[in-house]
Each structure stands twice: as C-alpha cells, then as structure tokens.
Amino acid sequence: MSGAQRVENRHLLTLSLVLGFLALYAATAAPSVLSGDSAEFQLAAALPGVPHPTTYPLYTVLGFLATRLVPLGEAGWRVTLLSALCAALAVGLFFALARRLLASTPAALVGALALGLAPGLWNAATLAEVYALLALLIVATALALTPTTDDRRPEAEAGAGWRPPGLRAICLAAALAGLGVSHHGLFTITTLPLLAAAMLRRGPAAEGDSSAPPSPSSGAPDSTFNIQRATFKRLLWLALCFLFGLSPLLYPPAQFALHGPFDGQDYGLPRHYFWGAPRDYGEVLDLMTGGTIRRGIFRAPSPAGALETLRMVGRRVLFEFGPFGAPLGLLGAWALARRARWAWRAAAWVFFSTLGYLLLLGPAVGDAPVFTLPMLLPWALWVAAGSARLIGWRGDRLHTGIDRRARFVLQRLAFILLVALTLTWGATRYRVSSKRHLWLYRTFAEATLGALPPGAAVIAHWEQGMTLQYLRLVEGRRPDVWVDVVEPSDDPWGARAMRRYPGRPVYFVGPPASVAGLHIELVREDAYASLFRLRR
Image 1: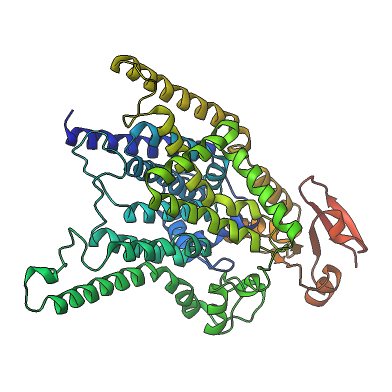
Image 2: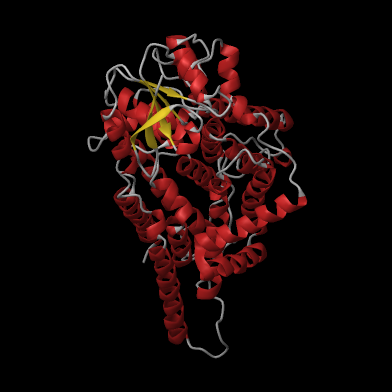
C-alpha cells in the first residue's frame, strides 16, 4: 500500500469516527429543554441573548447558528446537537493527534474509542453545555501544534523524523487559542501555555518556514537583520491570528449596544435577556471576566479538602475509563515519557493544571467533577500509548524466537482484545450517559404554566426558572405570565412577593423547604418541584 493510500485510509477512519460518534451522541442527546445552566444556554442561543458569566460568547453564537441552520427538532435540541457535534469532532481530531504522536493507527483508535465512550465527554455531548466545545478547542490546538512525521514511511517509529509545525500551523493554533481563551478559563490554564512552549521550541527560523531568512552561516550580508525581520513578521502574524480568535468577545458589548443599558434587575427582561442586566460597559466587562461568580470562587485548599479532591479525581478516572483503562493509562504515561518526553510533558501539563484548578475551587462550586473533562484528554492519550506498548505495533519483539507470522497474529489479537474491552466498558456507561428519554423538564414546565391563571407572577429558583423562561421566551408559551428567577442572595420569597407584586396572583415553584413559613396553598405536587399559591 502506498503512502498516499495510507493517508487516505486514515482520513476515512477519522471521518468514520466523527460520523459514528455524532450518530451516537445525537441519538442519546436530551430531546428537549433542560434546566438551570443548560436551559439558559438553550434560551440565550435561540434569542440570542447573553448567558451567565463569563457569557460564553462563542458557544452562544454557534448555538444561535445551530437553531437557524439545523432543520430538525425544537430549538433546545438543536443547541444540544451543537455539543454533540463538538464532542464528535473532538474524538476525530484526537485520533489524528494520537496517530501522529504514536505512529500507530490501532493504538490511536483504542484511545479515541476510550475518549468517546468516557461518560465525561459523552455526558457533555448530550447536554446544552460548554464543555464539549472546550474539549474540541483543546484537541484542535494541540493537533495544530504537534510536529509531523514522514508519512511516506509505513508506521514510522514515534519520535523519528519529526518536523516542527510550519508558520501556517502555528497561526492556526494561535487563532484556535484565541477562540479558546474567549470561551473558557480552563483553556487559558491548560492549553495557552502549550502555544507559548511550541513557539519557543520552534525557534526563530524553523525548517519549512517560507518566511525564514538565510542563516548567518550562509554568508548573506544582512542575515542578522533578516532573521530579526522574519521573527517580527511571524510574531505579528501570530498576534493577528490570536486577536482574530478573540473576536467572539465582541458579542456581549454588541448586545449591550443594541439593547442596553439595563437597570440591573430581572436579567434585562422584558427588553432583552442579558444576565446581570448591566448598566454600563464596565459592568459588561466585569461579567465577561467572571463577575460576582468569579469573586470568592477560588481559595487555598485545606489538607482535608485537597485529599478529598485527589480522591474524587481518582474515582473519576476509574469511572471514566474502567478497571482496565485506568491502569492502562498509567502504563501509557510511562511509555510515552520514555519515547517522546516533550509530548508527555504537554499531556501532563493539561492533566495537572486541571488538577490545580480543581484544588483551588471553593465550596461555592457544587459541580466540580464537570471540570475534570480536560483531564480525560491526556488520560486517553496515555491509554493509546499503553495500547501501543501492549500491541507492539512499532516493531518491538514480544518474545524471543517468535516468527513474523506468529507475531503478526498476536498483535492483531491484542488489538482486538483492547477494542473489545473498551467497547464493553463503554456499553456499561450507556445508562449514565444517555439522555434520550429526558422529557422531565419540559413536562414539568408545561404542566406548571398550564396551571397558572392569567397575569400570574411566578417566583422560582434558577433550575426551574430557566426552563419556564425558555418556554415563555423561545416558544411563546404564556406571555401573560411573569417568571421571577431568584438568586440565593435575593430577598426572601414572601417579602419579594409583597413588595414586587401587590396586585397580582403570586405562585412559587420549588421544594417545600423553599416556602416554609409562608401562607401558601399547594396547587400541584411534583417530585421535581411543586407549585404553590400565595394566600394573601
């Protein structure tokens, strides 16, 4: 088989992985509106509006395009489908990355399957959330920064014949890095340093760079000046590409220019949905950099807290990759460190920088496990490296005296066994990852809105309130009803109802504990959240 045919086959395999996982994620995605943050993303993308800090403009804009371009399903499902597409692309690009690093197509396939079937990525793919896009941006940037090898040599040994990424690849990585920085703070911590390290590793005049001037030893009279000029030119291109990647950050100020200023209340409604309802551009910038959510979120961990976080991460790795994938990742980390130390350092940085982020999260963050998603990427790479070690696809002798045919059979059997174990573990994760029957929130919201009299005001927590807002603002259900979404720092529900709605029928949505001590009447009981009427 020629080198061109091998490259074409790998591209077909990459495309097959993307399409296969897209089909899996779409089939198991939540079919309708969700709750809390996910419902808010579905709401903000469809309007379009501006969600909670850090406003996630890239996901919102892409979600808006999904609601307009996808011809199937309701608006909320279309936004969720964006997450499915991002996760599927992340799996496909991860396969290409692992193949380039390990020079082993079978091992890269095992790692890609382990990543795609890991509940962390699978869950992110089936909800309207920002983490699948985060994974895609990390993998895409890493792939652009990864040196290439000579594809004309069959299964070239990893680390042999590396060619540093050219100027185009570095510029692409810079643009992706800008998108990542505009999207999520975890990208800035985990991946932006890799871009800086790649630029330093590449040097001022890398081979294959069309802008590289003659070296000083070539005898050119102005070689030093030419090197400085070429370096400045490359840095200028990188800066421009990075700034282009930051362009989604223009979205929140543009929305404020169109719809603001607001009064600081009710998320900018009824004029427009803009979380925080900023009154000036300074408040817009504060929201984009984290706002009140950022302040106080990080703190130095206590020894007991740090130990519990480490235990959580250990349990998470076992939950994601199973009793076989977890130790296989440890083997792969050791094998990758021996064969390509720079690649191991990059993967370890992503893993341990995410761990540092988790250690610094304060108790105000109740969903810390979702931030472990970037850790799945290096671990899946280590799973691939461990698989390459077990398969011995790169020419390592399995046993002294084994002939070539027997070795060929043993390698294929090892590959089949690894794929079978990975798929078996992934099948056990279906029940915790699939959301295809998740109609709970729509059913609840429709029944709640249907039980309200004309002109009612509903006071609700964030989780239930965002679902109700989605039905009102996106689907036009009950425009006569006002939904008041309260935060924990807001005034008590009873006082809020008397102060804000003295002449309107007031209803509360939530668990009984939320309305304790109020003069209420139960209207509709639900295991998720009940509906109460305020008696005046």
